[in-house]
Length: 234
Image 1 (cartoon, helix red, strand yellow):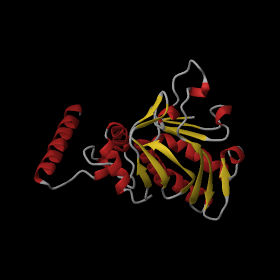
Image 2 (cartoon, helix red, strand yellow):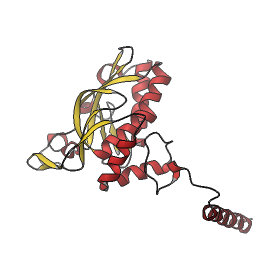
Image 3 (cartoon, helix red, strand yellow):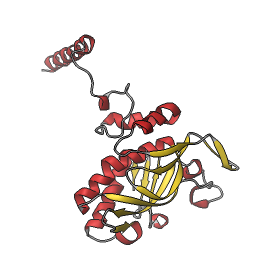
Image 4 (tube, helix red, strand yellow):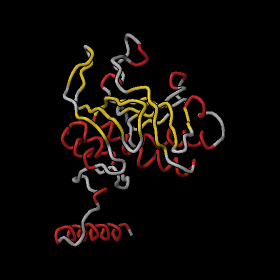
């Protein structure tokens, strides 16, 4: 039996190889590790790997932003600079808007903006449609860059905010004007709470770390969405 399975697997591999060689079949773009990430492609196990690869490829990351259609991304590329001594910023852009507006523009690493675009397209808006019956039009945040250590502790390591690779999100406004906040709507059993908890669960598909009100008191009023980490949602 094992021998038969191995033979079938070998034949399948050979068949795939022949198909590629003869041009009879091409790997779908979202499954190909050799093709550029597209925000509106279906999410596959390769998506996260493609996103991580952008950390060291400035031009490829900008190309992802430029090609984004759903959501379209309005941004300005910034030169590397040091706004505060001890916290240099590299590969950053200023994000003005996506498919949603923000309470203010913010500086973020290019991969963080791509991760937000993926999250917005594949998690935020589908959750809003499914659970609230309409899409999000506006996002309120507390900022991305802050030159500090974790929890402002003197002997702690630098926060992801020190490199503008994290965003703190406080609330959402729907097209109807209805507002949903982490502080006011996390607790309870209504659609608003279900919406926020679904976002918390799904955020680690694209962010290295996603922390919410259940993590600790410091996050009672916001989601901390950061690139650093291995897909932790708490």
